[in-house]
Image (cartoon, rainbow, N blue to C red; front, side, top):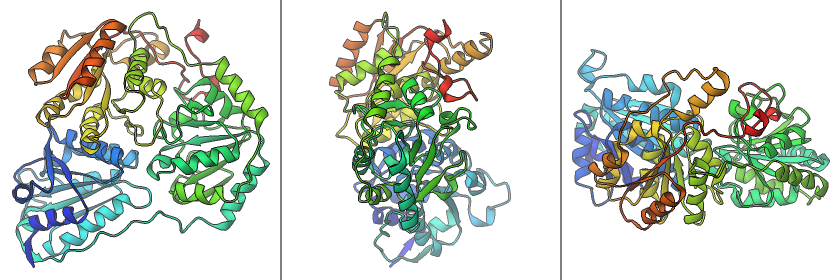
Length: 557
């Protein structure tokens, strides 16, 4: 049948099982929005306050559900406002399809009104991107975009469509979406046998879990693998929940704000098994001294990550869940009781603690864990509050902790919270924010109110840009250049003006009561938590130092 390009866009979304789109309309994409109006009973459109909010919401939807997130924007500034969200998804391997529309084909390259080369701009931060000028190419391009976004190592794909391509007609035939199978063709018998050999010889193995274990749904196989290898487990920020944070073998996060037990344990192990992680600089500290006593076995879907940041002893390339499944059938159960006792002693000697005299970030996160019984989906912005949320909430499943790890995007969390709540209406979704981040995205509270979402936004307000100030305090001789935010804004009045419920907490008791009320509410609630501006995230590793040199407040004294 003959359809216009805009009709083909909607039909292709329906083919792919898309039920929600986040976006903001404009002139160039108007044909698509007109067609979307006719299918509002099939595809829900969430109008965000800003295009960046739409891209973060699509990201949060994707991370929480495992589906491809979809966002729309018009040409020019509409498209460029998506870029930070696209880059965020790219750094954290999130499957996203961003659909933008551009000026008509005859106007391309002529500095036309709201014209921008969005394909050129996003090339470094997309897995692939397309510009469609011919309506005949549109359906297959959109189908390819979804396949690329979710295959192998997932990532964002951008499809830019000229306005005339959305208006012109061509023949359309419905197709079933391509089934994306786990990537296994590079999992070789030799690489598996080498991995088994390393594991068998090891007496002090340590398992380091990254975001790839979450993406591949490897939780069950990972648990079996850990038991067979008889090893302690640490994780990266992106790996949270793939292995339960409640398990006795779990030692906490690794790296700059990792636990002492994890940092010291990895520094003394004889085999580090990296499961779906890329060894970021925040994990490594000084790459020359990282796990220098250990052989390193890396399991990852992306061959480009092998020997990129650290030189490894051996590797298995492929879908992590599939690799673990095959290794589990080959490994004989080990007994490393002496090593496990050593790690348990480290955990007992170096627990992660905080000053509990007043309201603080760690207390807030622990209370959220307590009142939600560990079952909430937690999203975060970026900064001290992000680290506290990673340290003090015990994540028991994959896709429970959503945060911008690679790009470190302030302003990510609230949009992601909205997307996650829409994707997982069966779960309570809570965004943990700092006041600096809240200033960047509080306009999306309007979106949450409009959509009647029962999200809870916890703003940890220390009147400063906390993490930057912490660095200034420790490494810049307390020169607090432009990190003080004391501006007299009443956040409670602000959110109430947008239609949400607001609470202010200055004590533990006030926060406990406010959170209890928020969790019972069926509408958006914002809780402002006033804490001391000099509270810090501990432990810490100085930039470029070995992770074994982690220190806390007691070490400084």
